[in-house]
Length: 105
Image 1 (tube, rainbow, N blue to C red):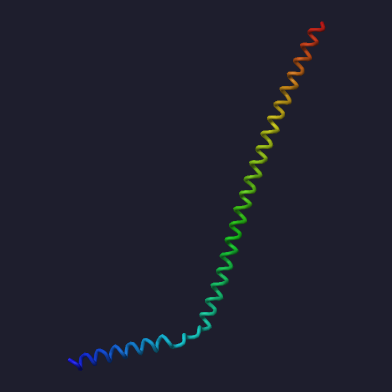
Image 2: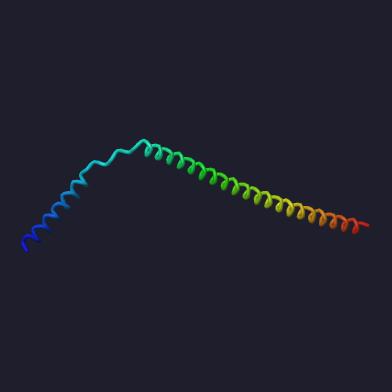
């Protein structure tokens, strides 16, 4: 029984020491291919950032165009309303002038 316990303790000690030694080993240095992959990843990220900026600029331009169209439509509507009011005033003035001319006769 003592031999079995000693054997189990010995195996546990060996695995514990091996795990500790593996944890202390230095990390392998990155290979040239890994460095190139990282560089390519940075290029892809830059391209993605540029693409996102372009999309945002296009969306901003579209929104500005939409706002300009709405402003033009509102200005046209106001101009039409002003013209209509001016025409109505002119018609009322003419009617008043005709009425005064009729009174004078």
